[in-house]
Amino acid sequence: MARSEDKLNKLKEDLERVYAVPVMVITKDLALPGAPKEVYEEVKSAGLKIDILVNNAGVGSFGPFVSSDWKEQENMIRLNILALAELTRLFLPGMVSRRRGKIINLSSTAAFEPGPLMSVYYASKAFVLSFSEALSRELKGTGVTVTALCPGPTNTGFATAAKLKKSKLYKFFRATPAIKVAQYGIKAAENNKVVAVHGLGNKLLVAAIRFIPRAVVREIAWHLQGKTDKPQN
Ligand SMILES: NC(=O)c1ccc[n+]([C@@H]2O[C@H](COP(=O)([O-])OP(=O)(O)OC[C@H]3O[C@@H](n4cnc5c(N)ncnc54)[C@H](OP(=O)(O)O)[C@@H]3O)[C@@H](O)[C@H]2O)c1
Image (cartoon, rainbow, N blue to C red; front, side):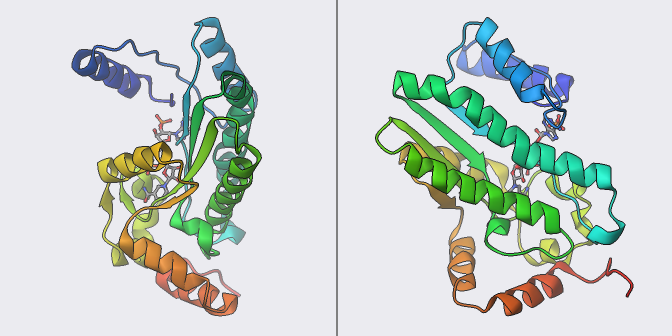
């Protein structure tokens, strides 16, 4: 499920050819109010039961909040937070009643610190992490698990879409191939891992952040992110 119908249909063809499984494509802009419910209704009317829900769709935006395009920020909150929570709420009761299911929510290493120049994005990923952790506890013993997958910089279309090429942080870290992160995420969910930080470097980074004063973390993040789009004051 995504907005680009042509890419989804190509993926459907490839999956059906290689794995001989039926694939259903739903084209939807999940940032629109009501979209998650429409997806749920389409899945229901096709008679499908969802055992694995991967809340992957997410966007970022690089630049100072003060001069940001509000529509873009709002869409980010709708997609990264609201759609993820609503899809979870819609598909979860079926999983619980069948006593089986896996939910993988795409968080990020960004969830562990504030992100100057990407403030809303980092905060949205902190929501995903906290929500997933809390939900995983609520669901203990139900047969349904929740995994917050936390990758670092990954080689996808994300950096271009988020105008991240201007960020020093992105140049600083080597991006991981997406396939490695996806495989790690599936394995983590199979092992009922609640918080899955991909890669040793990211694990060390996330652990170190706990011991550094928050004011220092903010400064480091600000300097690493780069000052190219610094607000005037
Ligand atoms: N890449 C990284 O460095 C990185 C690091 C940590 C976490 N993440 C997280 O990983 C997840 C996947 O991102 P990615 O790196 O694969 O980025 P990406 O290449 O830009 O992919 C984003 C995906 O979300 C879909 N999408 C975007 N807006 C949508 C909307 N309004 N409605 C429905 N689908 C929408 C896109 O499809 P359409 O454009 O066709 O809609 C695409 O499939 C995101 O949640 C991101 O925050 C990425």
